[in-house]
Length: 238
Image 1: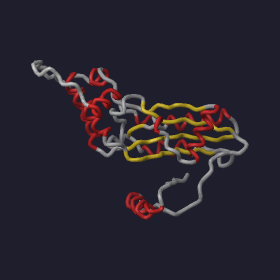
Image 2 (image 1 turned 90 degrees about the horizontal axis):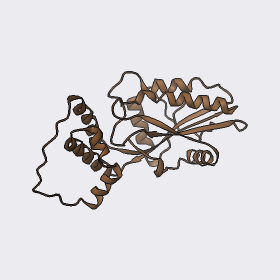
Image 3 (image 1 turned 120 degrees about the horizontal axis):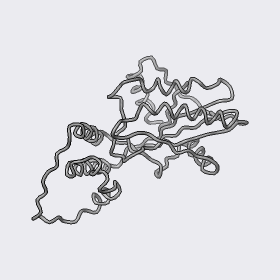
Image 4 (image 1 turned 60 degrees about the horizontal axis):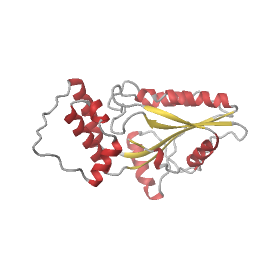
């Protein structure tokens, strides 16, 4: 099991220091690109996406019921030494600051409606984002709206949403790609990788789900995987 980081050369020294400051025994060295594919085998792949609104956070390292990395590496440990390969790829770039404004608007809407469900359901994220960019029609100042009160449980959930808005956000593509001697085995390995993401489910808020790729879409997905292409249409905000 190996970890690879593809970055511009000018950042290589900084990344090495960051890694070794967290994992003091890690060995960081430049290597040639890797290849997980069995030339005579079959491939299976899936993209990781958010199940709900991007403002709702997944479970993070602040709730360490288990070691997230251990759960993922356990899935990789079940691969055969020959004829099988798998990769979990993350393509990451800083998110536009408008997403922070979007989360703030959603939080305000939740407080206004007195409900997380109503706050998120009353207007779609895309519509709220449109209001942030183009402005909002002036409301009738004579109308006095009474503040709604959230339950204690809802307040705790809203705090988690607010925390996400306070942190740097990233536009992310997460890809799972598998190669094996036959399609059934490839899909089985892919299923094990998917199962390792269950640990990130945040009850009442958000969860990861998956989009499987087949045929022509699978070929394009593997092409983007191989060349580390960022797909803005499949990005998630983390």
